[in-house]
Image (cartoon, rainbow, N blue to C red; front, side, top):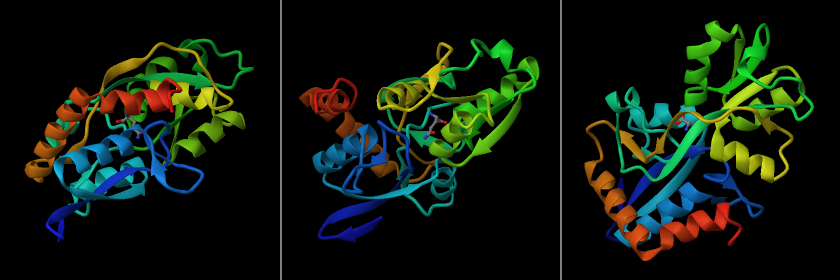
Length: 231
Ligand code: GLN
């Protein structure tokens, strides 16, 4: 962190495109549930943030190497990641779903045999794919960004993709030409993350700020703005 006018500025990584959690709006400004929550917490707790959009996996690497002070990227709190990250209190529930092209015959994982499944590098969707690929007999294709992963399904190269349920639901509502065919798997909450054992002060501020914006109703206002059309 850099000291400026008394308030520290933290370098925070995020995913390039993971709406409604982070995305560039029409003014090319980063917005979304994660970004708005972080900004609200920063204001509440008296710190500044410099948002650095990178791939999800890029944010993981940069946080682990100390180039970033932390990351907020719809990142699932998992036992494995807890070995190398410290997480905030959970702030949003999620899970991994399977999506296919709207006209596709595929109605279940059983029909993926011999086909390709698109996933995003370093994500829970990729982890899920690795876990079940032998059972269902599909091949895994990885992408660094969600849009490229979706594109691979829409063009028909991959038969399906695995991505987070709230993100797929939001995308489809916004006109993304995909269809969800499974219930969420690997369900768990998102958390803000710092490199393990580092940036304890920032983590405490995040938790204190999160508790406060939940109490004031600001957290719910942000979620409603993106998910319940109250923006
Ligand atoms: N929630 C998923 C994970 O933590 C996906 C995150 C993302 O794609 N930004 O792996």
